[in-house]
Image 1 (spheres, one colour):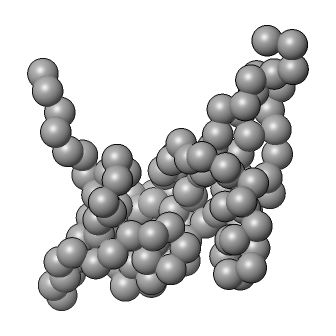
Image 2 (cartoon, helix red, strand yellow; image 1 turned 90 degrees about the vertical axis):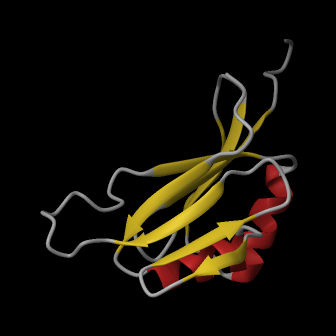
Length: 125
């Protein structure tokens, strides 16, 4: 198998609000929009994002609850400083895990958690 592209589809109550979050804070651009969905893209290895209007008739729990979108980035400390300046909703501040990952989390207006992480080898490894 040779995967040449990837898309993460998120069913949310307000696609436009999530779209503003991804374009403002995460460098995505709007590629396509209609009444019920919004397609976002970037020019790097990040997956495309499709924000789809959630069917409000579905039972609770079928939305973004429990969804975590994780991006491996370079210089996560600089991203943290930038996101703080922009007033992004940072829900887990920058921290270093014992296994060598430095990460932060932010949450969009629909409850989608986005994690930015960078591998920093533990001292002595």
